[in-house]
Length: 565
Image (cartoon, rainbow, N blue to C red; front, side, top):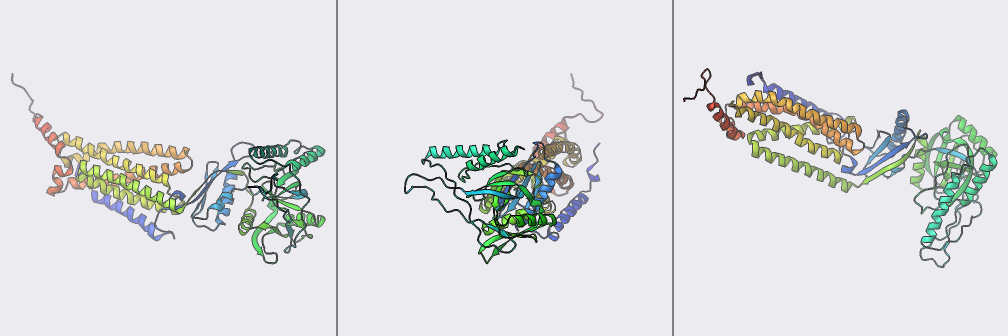
């Protein structure tokens, strides 16, 4: 049997809720260094989000330990950008990089495996652009002289010797046929680079395949599908320069990039160029010193992810381990390369499966659209509640406002404590949660109407209606929370934000219904105010009239309802 209304002490419930709100907002305003606003995702404030998908060499699922190590390394690289508010999180076997603001373009290159190795150059040739037979060409590409070879030494280097002679390319007719022929040549070169003979243990086959692949290689930058060479350290490699102007035939790797202890970029005023300065570890310094001593005036290729980023000519023996790379770098390129080398190699290979850049203007427009949508949803709920429940509708509006105050404070604190960001999907979850919260009030108020239809007064209907309504509210919210939890567990990307805000709002709905809505309704039911006790003002006039008629039709207690013949 339900307890009478007098057993409930609404003041204690409301005081406890007020204490929760005060505590939350004390944390919001007096802890942390950030603004008292939720942390917004890039789709609301603008920025760049890059999703990197891990690839395991054996084709299986990447080990969790390797993923966490890769996430940590990428996070150090992201922090090296110098933009506040960046974050790197694991999402299954993906690494998601989020960089707010206008400086997120560098995030697209942070997933490079940075598999650096040092190889001796067997031979190199500049890539000759395809020549057009007509003169002057309407849209042809003029030929250019081979660029000077970069240098490597302990002090700033002097200009190095040039590369070998140009490798001629067959002349092509302009148009679609020329493009098709170019793509066919590139496809052939790719197949040769992956030729089993190139990876064979037979030295003769290996050398012949390498020479053939080198001769066929065409580093055409117009082709979107890049050439990918093998990355086996004990095999020769045919590779392009990072600007696709040179091609190289390289010996097996003699020094891994893991032997680098530090890397930084700087400007060489003597030669007026940006350079990358390297420091090697003890064993790496010894190997590098031995190699440079035996190969003065020969080239050593710095190979990053099967591409030659620099192939300097060794000017002198470098015994101290301090090395300078020159390669016609821009300031950004020098800094990017130094950061990649400094922060280490990734234990896994990654490919960019998704890269999204949102301008600050578009983010602001998205935020405004989300706020408008939420405001319209609240307005419709308010109008419905006032029209249908009148004074009880006012209590609904007050409860929704207090629920919003809880949600807002929790979002701010979660953004500070665990880095949670509110995105458009999360806003959608909050808007749907408005309906879930309002549904709890509807269940309660409809149970009150059922009790009053049975002939009870509003005062006596409140505890009985609540006793029955709370079971339905708990069951409804439990189903919603379970659905949100399963969606959060199975989903990836932005859908997780939707599930998280939906589940969080469902939990806070119970807090508001138990600590605010029910105590307020109980207070109104015991009020001695004529305005509050008037059933019409509560939207209960019609049901109370039905209840009175049913009560009058019942027989008096102890007297059977006998009809006369």
